[in-house]
Each structure stands twice: as structure tokens, then as C-alpha cells.
Length: 66
Image (cartoon, rainbow, N blue to C red):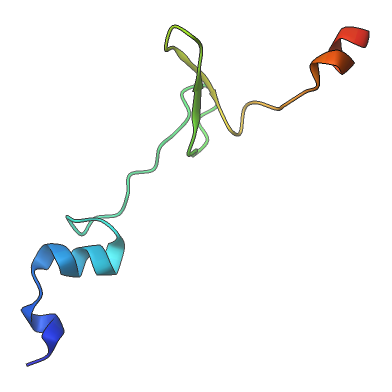
């Protein structure tokens, strides 16, 4: 009998898929653009307004010159 046959099902699932239940991670979608994302951006009140696909970083001094 192989050592792998003796492992707990949760360990086997974690090794195979990275999830304890054996399922795949649920794809998270941005509420603003609908694209799959990893990071949400929220305002100081906790309301999500964008993801890493929706926002861009701009230099404040450059924008003030326009």
C-alpha cells in the first residue's frame, strides 16, 4: 500500500487542488467592472468601488498641472 493511500482525504485534496474540500477556488468578480480580480479597493466607509483592473495610479502633481 502506498503512503498516499493512507493520507487523510483533506490532505489529499489540499495537495491536488489547494483546497481542503477538493473543489476549485471560486472566481471573484469585481462589482464595478465584472472582471475576475484578486484585490478590491474600498473607500474609507468600506464601500468597494474598483479592483486592480479598474484603477490606474497617476502622479498627483502631474494631474494638478493639467
